[in-house]
Length: 68
Image 1 (tube, one colour):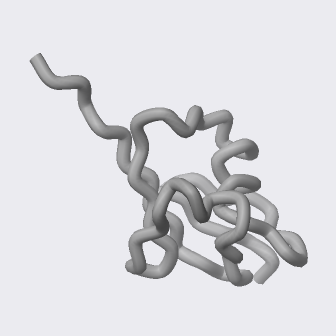
Image 2 (cartoon, rainbow, N blue to C red; image 1 turned 135 degrees about the vertical axis):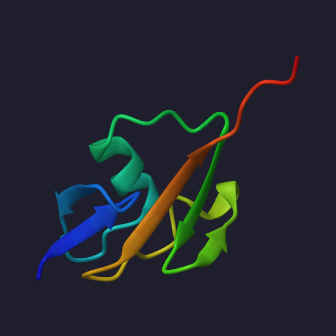
């Protein structure tokens, strides 16, 4: 496969040792107000740089709205 699906919509190339941070960078997402899950498991923000994303993963990135 060598692909990762983001938000059931976007496909990006997977590579060895890919992390959540790499996915966010590939999508040009900023890290401030987002929640990420990989294959249904929530990933804490301080783990983005370390958390592996397996080949074929389903990644969900949810932007949190500002209050108001």
